[in-house]
Length: 176
Length: 387
Image 1: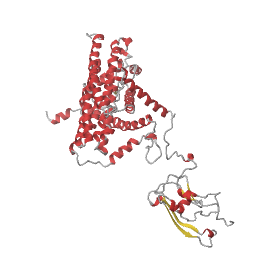
Image 2 (image 1 turned 120 degrees about the vertical axis):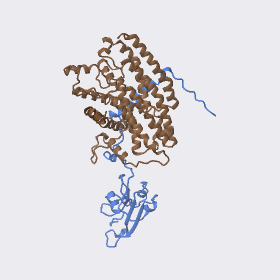
Image 3 (image 1 turned 135 degrees about the horizontal axis):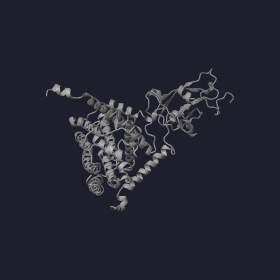
C-alpha cells in the first residue's frame, strides 16, 4: 500500500531559504572554529604519533618465539601451533637435540620455524594452544616488507621480536 | 601604407608593458591562486568536517611539512606525468578541444579586471576597456561551449547528461547574472571597471557608502536608499556566479551521486586538470568581479585612500607603496570571497534540478527585472535630473 507523506507546510521565511542557509553556514563555521581552537581531537598523525603507549594488555600483534632466562629456546617442535593455525601460516621443521647438549632431555627443537605474516590473522590460537609457553603474540603491528619473502618471519626474526621472557613454568629444568 | 610603415608606427613600450602585465597576472597571480585554492578547498573542507586535510607535502626529501603547502605542486606533477588516455569511442577533435575551451575563457576574462590602482603611473589592469562587464559576459558565456562539447564528444551517457544540464543551467543563470548587473551600471553610469572602482574609492563602496559624497550626511541620500536594490543585485549576482561556475549548491553538471563525474567522466590526466583549473579560475575571476562591482575592488574602506593620498603629498599620481597596498587589498578581498565560496560549498546540499530551474527562471529573473525598475525609480526621485 502506498503511503502518502504530507509535505511540510513551510512558512514564508522558510520559503526564502535565506535563514536556513545562514543557519547552515553558522553550523559549519562552528565546527571549523572548534577544530581550529583545538577543542576537538582529530586523527592521529600516524608515523609521528603512535598509540603504542596506549595498547591494551591483551593486544594481539605479531606472534613471536621466546627464550627463557637460561637462554633456552622454549619451543619443543610439538607442532601443535602449526596444526591449529587457521590460515596455515606456521611451518615448523623439527630437529633432534644432540645428546651432548645441556638440554638434551628436551629431545626436540625447531630447525626452522617460519610464520608467513601475509597469511597470519593474529587470532592468537598458537599462543593459546602452546603447551610450552613458547609462542606469544606481541604488540608489534606494523609488519612490512618489500617482497613476499621478507614477510616470512624466520626463527631468528621471531626470537628477535620475542626476546627473553622470565617467570614462566620451567618444566625442563635439570632439577626436576 | 606599406607594412614597414605600419610596423614602424607601432610603439613597442606599451606592448611590452601589457605583455609583462599579462604574464605577471596569469602566471604569478591567477595560476598559483588556482592551485592554492584547490589546497584551500581541501583544508577548509577538512576543518569544517573536523578533519586535518592535506598537511604533509612540504619541501621534497625533508620532513618539513609547511602545512601541506607543497600539495598543489605534487598534484600538478602527478597530473602531468599521468597517462593521457583518450577512449576509443569519443569524437577526437572536440574531445581535445573541450578542455581548452573551458580554461581559455576563464583566463581571458581577467583582462578587464582592475587588480590595483596605479603602479609608477601605469594602470593596474591589462585592458582598460570601456565595456568591461559586457566583455566579461561575452567571454564567460563561451565557457559553456567547453562543457557542452566535452559532454557530447565523450559519447557517454553520464557526460552527455552533465553537458546538457550544464548548458541549460548556465544559459538560465546568465540572464539573471546580466540583469542583476544593470542596476549597478545605472548607479555608476559607467561601464569601465577601473572608473567604477575609482568612483567607489572616492564615494563609498556600493554596499558600504559611508564616506565621501556617498555618505548620507554628505548629501548621498540616493546612495543610502540605493543600498536596498544594490543588496538584492549583490545576492542575485553572487548566486548566479555560483551557478555559472558550477559550484555547489549548483553543481548539477558534475554531481557525483548521479552522473559519476558529469561532463568530465571520460577525461583523465592533464585534460581533466584543465577542467578542474578552469572551474577554479572562473571562481577566482567571479570573486574578482563581485569584489570589483560591489565591494570597492582594490580600494580601502572609509576614505582611507583619499587620506593616504594626502599623506603622500596630495598629487594626482598614486605613490608606489599605495599602489602595492591596493593590489594587496584586492587580493585579500578576492581570497576572502574564495573562502566564502568554499564555505558555502561544504555547507549546502545540492539543489534538485527543477528547484534550480525554478530559482533561476521564476525567482531571480523576475527579481532582477523588478530590481532594475526600483533602482531607476530611486535614481529619478533622489538625483537631480539636470545634473
